Image (cartoon, rainbow, N blue to C red; front, side, top):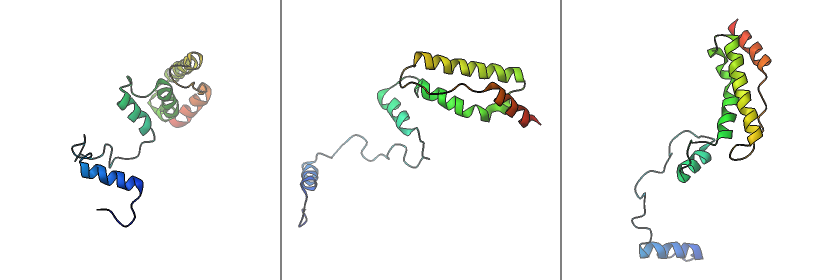
Length: 127
């Protein structure tokens, strides 16, 4: 039923509803996806990967960025300085490769990790 003022858009929606255009739509009666879950700042990338059926989940440059950001938190897991240095060298090698090849997607602006600073931080945490 139309109110005393009905905009053009409201009228189109009302007429479509009366014609049954909104009946039996896919997903009718189901909850919205991700409703009630905690906010994830990478929701748009995950949604894009799901919709477009992209292999490997998140883009390699973003995966590498996340690994660099999380690296300092993982320092306590290293038992020796040599193992830590190897891990830093490996990660820095992948950063360098990403910068040279520009992987798929936007170029990365990641800087190599400072192995000496991380080793000092690791030593301080072991005391």
